Each structure stands twice: as structure tokens, then as C-alpha cells.
Image 1: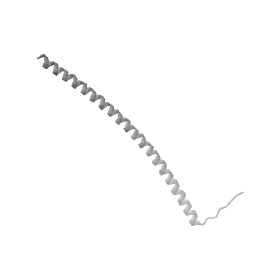
Image 2: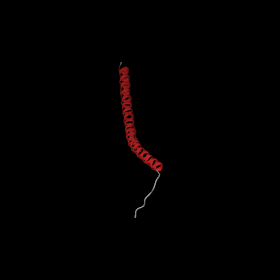
Image 3: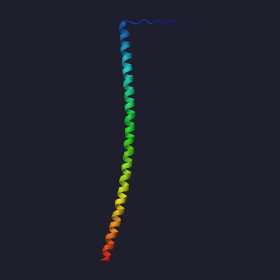
Image 4: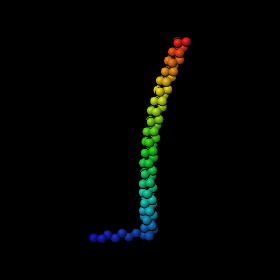
Amino acid sequence: MQDNIILARGEYEILLKDSSDLAMLSNDYKHLKRRNEALEEHIEDLRKDTKLYIKLYKNADARANQLQKMLDEKELEDLTND
């Protein structure tokens, strides 16, 4: 069984344009979706980097405090020995 649909030329051109517009929108959506995924990965990498730098800063700060304490103890020892 075959159904035939008869369209006016103007209607056909409108449907053809709509179809073309939908195809372009679909391509744009796919592109934007891939771009969004890449940006989300980049954001996650930046979060990881930030956590790493915070950890490194805290470790460096702790080492600096430890060295300052050792220096203060050494200076105090030198003062008491004089």
C-alpha cells in the first residue's frame, strides 16, 4: 500500500528549508556538545592543578616554618653559649 502526499511547491520549499535548518542545528549542537565536554575536562584539570598547587604550597610553608624554628633554636643556642 502506497500513500502519496501532494504538497504545494511553496510548502515543499518551506519543509525543505526547515529540514536544512534542522540539519544545521543538529551539527551545531554536536559541535557545541563536544566543545562543552572539552571545556569540562579542562575545568577538571584546572581543579586538579589547583589542588596540587595548594598541597605544594602547604608543604613548602610547613618546611619554611620548620626551618625557621630550627634557625630560631640555633640563634637561641648561640646566644646562650656566648
